[in-house]
Image 1 (cartoon, rainbow, N blue to C red):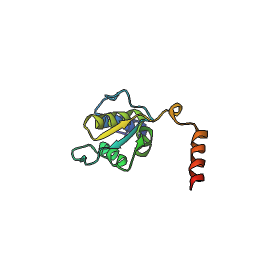
Image 2 (cartoon, rainbow, N blue to C red):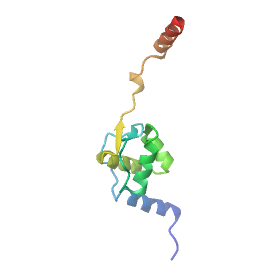
Image 3 (cartoon, helix red, strand yellow):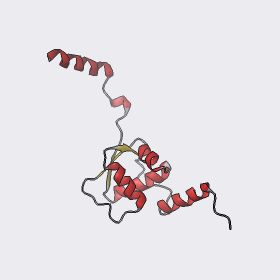
Image 4 (spheres, one colour):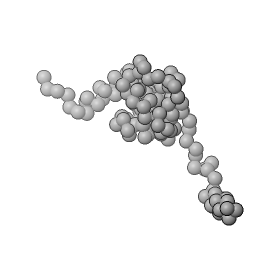
Length: 119
């Protein structure tokens, strides 16, 4: 019997990593959603992939896309893992700030100039 090709191994791995699920329990996760590990939560009992997500997110907020990139996992698989970790209370997530809600760059520059003038 010949060993499976690399692509087939990746497909089987994704199925196993997500416990056979193709969709996350939370539809609000986007690739730019920011995730953080909850301080003090132990990764004991988590699968190696979920533990890796926890370890990455302990260093500060990362986007779902960044987590997927660091773990070399598809976005869909990463969303399932993060969704599971949110459900279990290990991870918190928040939406990224839309660019339309950010302050105007010109306004920020004027504030900075004003503060520097006072010093």
